[in-house]
Image (cartoon, rainbow, N blue to C red; front, side, top):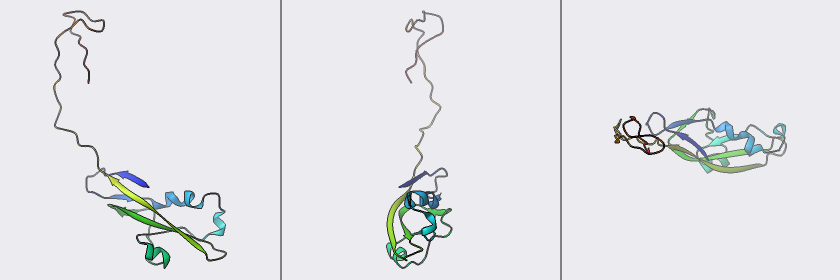
Length: 120
């Protein structure tokens, strides 16, 4: 799963799918495999057709992505899937707010010293 924050509130984000290349390969020698490719459907990954290009700048609102790893030696391949998600930023309520306390003698301060303890 790849997750990014929706930092401009448009519901979509740019994903670098190639960050999954190393985990997909694992300890296998990359020389033995064709370039790892990414697709938006299982049918496309199986074909292979309609590869996501460029895979390092894929724009999405969140969806399933299929990744294809193919042997350069045998032509055999495996397909796996993962999710990309665009997470909304938290909403801050209108502010700033004003916090007011009476001058107290708590936590080592004394009355009329202008110090109070706020629990934010």
